[in-house]
Length: 591
Ligand SMILES: Nc1nc2c(ncn2[C@@H]2O[C@H](COP(=O)(O)OP(=O)(O)OP(=O)(O)O)[C@@H](O)[C@H]2O)c(=O)[nH]1
Ligand SMILES: [Mg+2]
Image (cartoon, rainbow, N blue to C red; front, side):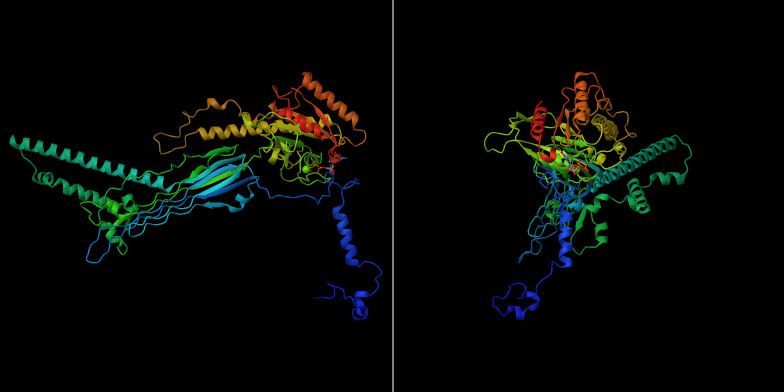
């Protein structure tokens, strides 16, 4: 043990460890440096005493966050069927007993409360379901591949970008091959009919005593069947691509060669139906509520059949089984639109994060500079802690889609996003990328710094950006809808079907994007700063005139929400006036 860890208790110690007991003039330079660094780190940027609402810039918790990611899904391949025969003493040639292959695993998605970010999924990049195990001898079936459930936060939108479905492609190839074969058979039949007709004509001519060309007659008398099979063979040799695609589905007894494969005759492939149908492309899910059951995205391949399935009079001991099906590969895009009840919108450094801290237990970062907040933060306001009377008596909980839950509202959530700057809708600053998080909030709270110039101008600037953003999003969504309605299925007869697309239903903008129709109010913060009363009075008068209809809605959009526009003065840093905000929000949410 080092002497520094435990000072010796006897009196000789100072003599034995002089350096430890030497009198010190003051703290060493290193200690001073550390103390001063600590002091610098923990001090707040203003000279008010440090508190939970006036924290040092370093005093925050930063959860990992991702709100957009691409993900590739690989559903499980089906296991192969098995070719096996019973082997027993005195039984030279036992019956077939190969087991079936197991089906591949499916991939599902579910939305659940508790998840708040896509960062875990973003790290993964791909998700792979388990493959079905192969069948085995003694009629042992392969086990099913493991399913995978992707859990995402409520408010996630799932869009399919790309899909490859080998089973569907194979089915298509088989169909094409069969159609070609049918066409060939038809040609041969027609040629045969033509030959018979000519033969008849010749016979008639002969009977009437006319002269007939002998070479032509021989040709006509050639064996028709022989000729047709030769024609098919020749064509197959010419074009190996046209080889029967169903042949690739068969699996031969171990040890048999490709030549055996060519030479053997297989029965018709049995028709198989999947237990789970692959959802039609393109998948588009809006998981704005928790899913009751996981939703299927990609189905695993069907397992192959063991050789007992093919026992027949022609094949008493079949030496073949079928392979498992390849499964779907799908690329999806996940986009998280946090579903908070209230969205805080404000210019940078307005005091949004401080307000969130004062209303909730959030520990988001606060600093006296623009763009302290770089990612959205969500805080929960607890109304009823079940410890006596609720803080606010609220009516039934209303969901963002307008439906009402039967449970009482006990909490609501607030989203704090990075500040908006002028031109944000043109992707200036940070806010635009995050406005989508408040786009679906039921109530918008505009946070305006009373100490930073004219509050009315600030409110107008904010609304202008929000209005322009809403317009841009509507156009984007409209274009997307139009694209999704076009029938891109090139396999169906005819060209791309633009005419049948249902564009009539697209004229009305989607309700969720109608930002200007949402209830809103203003939080006039930093009211503790000197000489802010006049600014507040002007703001209040402006809002009153909007409510009375004397002034237009700041976004300039007609039929916007102007029912009861109000401004609540608060000093978030001191926690003063914030209770009123809670009451006001609950009133608007229950409207
Ligand atoms: N005097 C006073 N200062 C406040 C008040 N609220 C916030 N501040 C200060 O204003 C500065 C900015 O606060 P933030 O909460 O980080 O502002 P923000 O809007 O989140 O800023 P960004 O995240 O950059 O957009 C900090 O120094 C706060 O201490 C208040 O009510 N009164
Ligand atoms: Mg902030």
